[in-house]
Length: 570
Image (cartoon, rainbow, N blue to C red; front, side, top):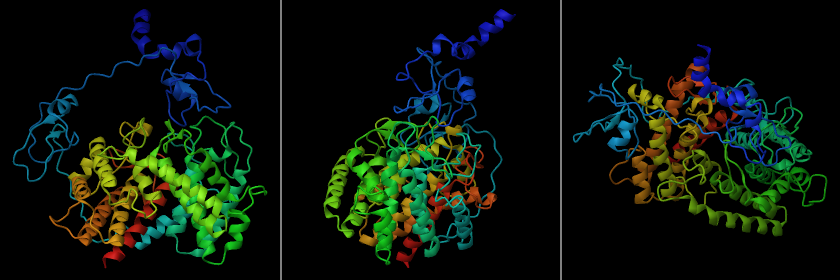
């Protein structure tokens, strides 16, 4: 009996049993990642993989890796289509736009073509599970704000609690130390920069903004001066300890090259505000000193953008800290933004030579970006094609110059494509539809497995933000998007009249943004508007990191740009 037991379990535990000996011998430069950012030793070995920390780790080699010559077991065959496919009423979509009958049934789903289909029911749908009819959720009348002013103020309060932690200037990613990816009680350079930018845009109290931006500037100058323990430039470290500012030394995806451009972009916006409001002294002392040899290395803006200017073609980690590429759309679109806004500061400070250098690099970067549009959607990188990082980039990196404008063919095609993907990926989207709730919930990318692979609040709010930006852009230019863009928006679910005016279009995309925010509201209201990282793809409950700062930033930004769009429609 013991022998039989060993044989039965051998295929499951073999890799873990031998992992501590010969089969785990591996060159640190020849490892295939078996985990995810934040995995610990027990979880790694529990998957039958090898664990061996690497420090220093300039090449970002994984600590958790497959044993040499490891061949993962083949995936189980798909379940056969259910016999219970008699459902000509309500159908839960099981496919995507363009799926074939064979592809549908290979997923274990039902296929039934409908010639007369006024309700646009899917041809590929989940087997009928005889669920009782769901109660309908009341939807506010068109034009109703998804969140009241009081609710926005509540979320602003939660957001502010995560800024300037311990009066250090640090921004905590989330005050949660027990997430699926480990503790979030760190200052991520990316999250911090974008959160402080959101503060400047959405908070009307200038004294609060000034105080927090002053503390943030102190923090940035401090961490820029740290000696890096991981043998990389400290400006491309992913995250820092709070409140000390010491770079994190554990295993992580390094380098994160988007950080300097994002941080400089935020500080440049603050510098331009100060210059226009009598604060040029602070800019000259801390943000742009015009002296690269001084103790502040030319100022926080100059020091970061000099790294971008010299290294924008280098490889770095993606937005989600999982894959590495030298051609990430997220990075390059934001590099362009940071360099251009920083050049405006350089010009005002009299450093026209540096401004010219930075603008020339921004133009060079811009010339590489149209290749990311494949005729259907904008892809993130060749090793991660469909990714909602590009949705967030369209918001954060836009310079109001028409380049990947929020109402363009490229952006609308990306929205329509990702809508198809995420709708069919998350059962909660079909469940919400069933109760009459409009909108859609977005995740990070197809095939995401982190914490089970779920919708994210920040990504979903970024989609609504992008729709509102599309309205703002249309009202600003007073031009209707082109035929291909209108076709894409219709495919994405935007309800438009046959021959819309530019104001019809703006009103329609504001409504679509509202629909998405209504769906977010439905899932966060039971939590008193505390915003976590994710929404469970099956139950709709908030999960993963609680009180995620970036979630608040995105929801607050969406509501701010909604107000801008609405004011243009009055």
